[in-house]
Image (cartoon, rainbow, N blue to C red):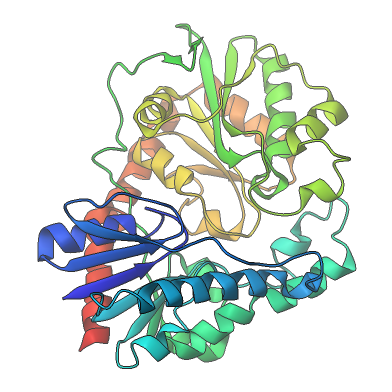
Length: 402
């Protein structure tokens, strides 16, 4: 059995399932990406070129679609030259690389699409941050057109899947019958509580006796509530002299359009300039490799996670798998995983007073919350491990093939 995976990146959402299929079930797996990756024992990698794309002359509302078309056509032309590639199944990440054109190259090959997010302009990520300057009208118009490729892929695919029920609910009702909810999977054997974890991270040594508050995000941005967290962390540090805050991530914007109001600054710089927090015990340590992050999460006394109604971060589930004590925003993606009082605590996204008071209470008297740590890891082991998610994907693949 030969499965062809399409994504602009690697390993992304498909690396683990590809290795699983190759190692455990002897499938032949080919991974097509824009990123150059050397072949491995399990996977053949094919790189497609970065060509074309939207320009300043492209209409603002169609730029995303233009980029997707160029990328998808590059995949088509690359595979057209590879007569040795004759897949039995195609799995593609809709939104980055469409498999639509491959119907012409492999007309009888079934296709499965991974759907990450379908955009809406009302009661969605677009208008959730009502406390910040609203997006310009043209951005709202662009969002309505941004789903064009996803709609084509929804019509074209034989089946699709999404990682959470929240993300599935964003997709149009008329295509729900094609969709499965299967999470990407957490390696709970790697993301586990470490006894005697290391205490030095990128040159920062965590002294004994301090309470450690952690925050992890790929980028510091409004989508992940970085400004809410930093304001709360500043207040917590002012009230508690024994608290250190460690922030993991990069000073960049991965999602959203924060740059529209930050006056040329990064969102982090804009937040710091606006609120002037005392950073003497708030430490930004950049990105950490997973081998170090698992130690930091094991060391954490309290882990705070925020997100607007949007894609749920792997970092939250990694933290839960490490047995971290979770304090999360009471937003739909988080509610699906964190149950208030059962495996973590929740607070209203904009309620900084509640975030501060709950955090201090949990830091002051951690004993009553130990059960939440165990329950958080149990949640991952019961529902989100690779051992559960990968067989679910295989079952879906086989059902489409049959």
